[in-house]
Amino acid sequence: MAHTELGGRIAVVTGASAGIGEAIARDLAARGAKVVVNARRADRLAALVSSLGEANAAAVAGDASEPAVVDRMLDVARERFGAGTREADLVVVNAGRGLAGSVVTSDVTQWEQMVRTNVLGAAHLIRAAGRRMLKRTEGKTGHDVLSGGSQDIVIIGSNVGRHISPFSSMYGSTKFAVNSMAEAVRRELGPRGIRVTLIAPGFVTSEFQGVAGYETAWFEEVKQRIGPTLTPEDVARTIGFVVSQPASVHLCDVLIRPTRQDYP
Ligand SMILES: NC(=O)c1ccc[n+]([C@@H]2O[C@H](COP(=O)([O-])OP(=O)(O)OC[C@H]3O[C@@H](n4cnc5c(N)ncnc54)[C@H](OP(=O)(O)O)[C@@H]3O)[C@@H](O)[C@H]2O)c1
Image 1: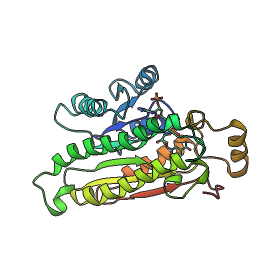
Image 2: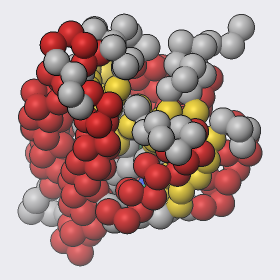
Image 3: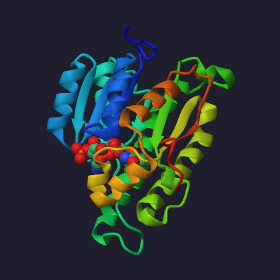
Image 4: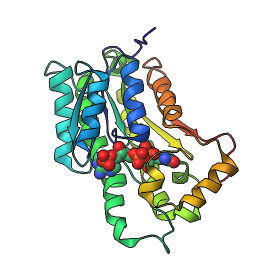
């Protein structure tokens, strides 16, 4: 039986051409949400939209760290699924990348792109989505800010954004930034009825390891030692559960690890 608990919700998911973001888009759509998907690879997004159905999904290709692309995602959500007036109310800040090695050993030529995507891109989307979501509760006070229904900003942090990992410390630093941003914005927007949720996964097998430049033999050893690792679907299902709670209930901070992951 099809889920309908997110019927009427308008979602935006960045980094949806692969891995966790694609699984989130599929899960939200299966629960009844309309979904705008973003990533840089337009062909992968087109295939995703066609599999979800054009009535349920739309693509905005581009770099999620660019403010103009962020605005376009939110505009498309409003125009395609909100009858030109209703803004996206379920925004998943997922686009990101890893980087093998520490501050001392990692490839310094990739630092700027990683910081731009993981930190500045996240900040631009949180800011733009938050400003639009605030319009729904303008003029409302007290419990009444929840009367228009749930609004969610879900931010994908990382286990290494809260537990220090010396072997991927430059990447971990970007996720520590996102972690603090998420809680700060939660304190700011929660009282206005907007749930700001941090999801911090441990090891998830996806394209992440290849993009980050992890050595295959090292990751195979990790998988043997602490696996089974999480799947993108495990993370997506958790988010689906979180955003399906009543508007007055907020599971605001979820650390999800493979059961056998001991460290970090
Ligand atoms: N895998 C893990 O173990 C793990 C653990 C904790 C947290 N995370 C976080 O989870 C998120 C998703 O990672 P994943 O495991 O699903 O990795 P993935 O399989 O490599 O997917 C990353 C997605 O982000 C997109 N992307 C990257 N840079 C982008 C940009 N500048 N603009 C728009 N889209 C961009 C990629 O698509 P294009 O290349 O088409 O743009 C892709 O769709 C990331 O924030 C990551 O840091 C992952």
